[in-house]
Length: 244
Ligand code: NDP
Image (cartoon, rainbow, N blue to C red; front, side, top):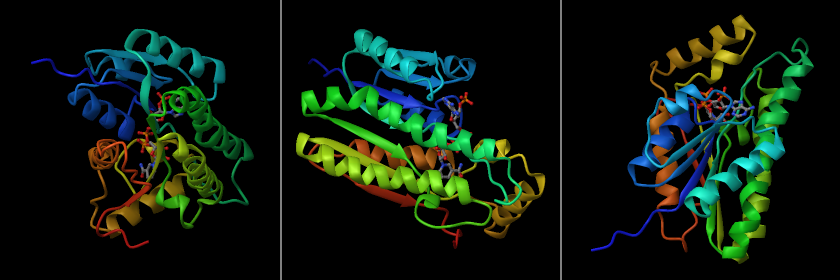
């Protein structure tokens, strides 16, 4: 009996957290993968079969396009991209270094658009494919010290809905994933120690148990593994004890 070959899946931000968990999940299901992040070692250390891991900054448009083209030559057309790479630099808007706003806008929004650019045309030509954009519950509502980050995630949620409407006549699905707090490296890049402590205290208030990266990977896998005629447009998930 011949087993159908699984198609290529591209995952950005695969060197830690949600992206890394998603890489493990899809590899376990037999997909060849293109893994992208700036740090190569954690992706290579996964030791996943049929996987091309490349050190690519998602803000580098040419490098993103080259990486996807290279993986497609090796494994065939990308059937899905998980646009997951992101940074969260929380800050008091009156105090925060505006360079941090720029970094978040560049990575979370422009970087994500680069991922879309790398696959959308091919998917439309093939009338098949799935674009998964990792937004956040902060793409739907406000949180303290989140102004610029919330701005980037509202942008992701908004552009994803627009993209879904534009690609749906071509049989291409667009899925928006909006997690609440997840235990990953994400908070570690915030530079304001007081805000970091406040965020940790908030997590303790909900019993210290937030989502795991595997929980979010499971939601991404669930959406992708529906029949192509079924589009799970949006998944909002958070720890049961997360009130806000
Ligand atoms: P992590 O910090 O663990 O992972 C972020 C990933 O993004 C890393 O692999 C990092 O790799 C990559 N990344 C960051 N900047 C770039 C860049 N310029 N180019 C390429 N890759 C980059 O955090 P999470 O797993 O939590 O975050 C993943 C996504 O989930 C983000 O979009 C985040 O906003 C979102 N999210 C997270 C929540 C949480 O509570 N953790 C809640 C809701 C949404 P490297 O540094 O090697 O480049």
